[in-house]
Length: 173
Picture 1 (cartoon, one colour):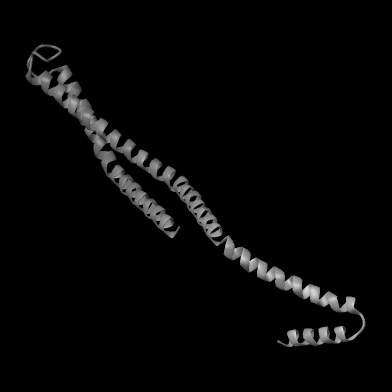
Picture 2: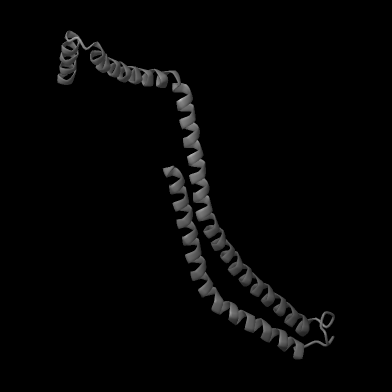
C-alpha cells in the first residue's frame, strides 16, 4: 500500500512539472506491468482445459515409464529365481525317475524272465546292478533333498519379497 501511495504521489508531482515525457515513463511502466499480469491470468484461464489435459498426459506417461522401470528391475530377478526353482525341482524329478526306472529293471530281472535281459528267474548280475544304481541314486536324492528344501524355501521367500516390493512400488506411483 505504501508503494502504491508513493508511486501515486510521484506521478502527481511529475505531472505538475513541465516535463511531460518524464511523467509518462512511470505510467507506461506501470501500464505494462499491469497488462502483463492481467494477460497471464487471462491466458491461463483461456487455455485451462488444454493445460490440464497436457498435464494429465504427462503424468500418465511418467507413470508408464516408472512402471516399466519397476518391471525391468524386479522381473529379471523373479524370473531367475523361478528358473533356479524349476531347475532344482527338475533335477529331483530326474533322480526320482531314475530310481523308479532302476527299481523296475531290478524287479524285472529278479521276477520276470520275459522282461529280463538274461531270461532267467532270480536276482542275477543285472538285477544287482540295477538295484545298486537305484540305491546310489536314492542316497544321492536323500543328500540333496534337505539342501534343496533350504534353497527352495530361500528362493520362494526371495520371490515373495521381490513381488511384494514390486507391488508396493507400483502402488506408490
